[in-house]
Amino acid sequence: YIFENRERYMKCTNAPYFAGGHFDTTNGRIFIYKDTPKLYETLFHEGIHQLVHNVTQMKEKNDKARRNINMFWFTEGIACFFEFFKRDTVGGFVLGEVSKDYVGSVQALMKSNKHTPLQKMMKITYMEFARNSGNPQYVSAMYAQSWSVVYFFYTYQNGKYVEKFNDYFKREVDMKGGYDPAKEIFGDLEQLNKEYEEYVKSLRV
Image (cartoon, rainbow, N blue to C red; front, side):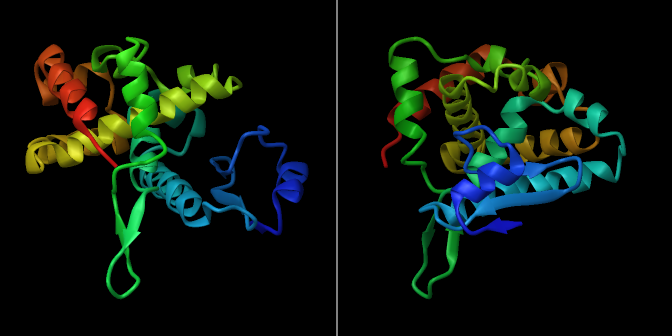
């Protein structure tokens, strides 16, 4: 559903005041509004939620069961990863660019030691995040960090962890994701966190 403006979107959906759009898992629909400078970013973000939801739905029909098992860093991380793009020479979309919105936020959190290390991030379920989602500062910080985790997995050292991330992706849509599967696939999470933090601190827009 595409609303003419933000005011009508808010009135009809009762979304949080800071929402730019959303995907409703109860009916499988995306809700966005036109008068936003981030129309494509929102479409890509919510479209990824819709895609993963529908793939997972093939495995499990119960929405509550799916949301209880999905890990926050994965669910929001891939959606945030696909938000950012550039145009190629013929106007097409090149997805997965460094986020000018998120990278500075994550780096600031790391500098002040207020970020969530991978070992802790990988324990947070989507439902646990949702319980605190009324706090816009918390939401912003967690979205930025989830983006940085997925960006790290896709791009670090020319894709060093892409294959492992894809293996973990399969676990999530099979409803077998979580902290222990992450440890099994990625190995020493403390060492992984060191690589992750060093890489994110080095990123430039």
